[in-house]
Image (cartoon, rainbow over all chains, first blue to last red; front, side, top):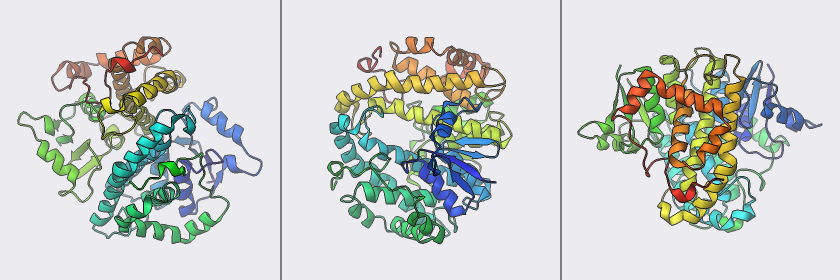
Length: 241
Length: 241
């Protein structure tokens, strides 16, 4: 079965967590809005919900046969056991999903560093609040989240190579993306944070070196980071903390 | 099996979405930190993660036998099919969970109306940003979310009485809580919003009238709304939009 991924074509955004899972699995998929001729109308029709009785609130959405699944973590919940990216047991699936939902909270907080007041305003219209929020993020929230995942890696009875047991899961892929994104957004602040989280840094390197992920990252299927996505590099927000 | 719910004893917060599901199901559970003698140490030990190899990032957490499950939506994912609060089919469970994750996003945005800069600061330290964020929330975001759920209710082939098919689900309970909370936080703004969303208002009334929910709401197991939770009534944030 060929999956269809519906997501904005010009950003990594939340769709990237799905792209990474599909790529790591070697799944057959088409990134609908990034096809050569572009398919934004198909994406917009799906979101406007006139073609489906169970419309998504927002992209990303994944079509899998007759199913249309939205919400990033929900898509990964679906893909995980089908592609060996989550344990088969219920307890293992719930734990992997719990980690993913905490990653989703982390991502929301990264996003709000540059949009603390409203998505409907430009960054330039909310700079003072963004500076305040980003400073708190770098001082308190990023260390709290990164420290949590470092602790989870260290506490795993199967060793610190993966978040869940001894195998790659979609949570590992998402955590890779977070570290990559934070490096892009906060190049001044991240080295200090990385020094305190060696297991996370090692996980990031291991994921990046996986053949399918390395091939994906080097391809033009990987949208470059930019200032329209979740992880944006605004030097004035990148304080040393 | 008696469940153990671990959550802050003095607020509804995110734990309330779990409490409502347990109450609607008539499940056997103990709200650990609200027991007469208080059990905050047990809650804190669970969060500090020294007793479990898979620690929660934050409460709520549910102990179910040997399982310790955290993240509100994940707990509901677990409880749903066990207590008839989600469909048995995979497609139905994914759809219910997708709605719950969109509700979780909505809740985050409600919270950030009073804490747009940092959880580590008091509301009084971030009032100007809170006023700006709350105004955008009431003008744009609340109508967008409420409009989405109204549309989902209207599009359900089984009728508009429930979000998912013809039976109560945990998503209905959570949406009830959102309407109740918005009424508490924004008594000036909500009447106008309610007029545009009659199906949501009717769903709220139907959930409140269910015998188990009505009994719960009238009991002292229901923590009153207050200014420490997600839904806070600060009159200066409650503009007419």
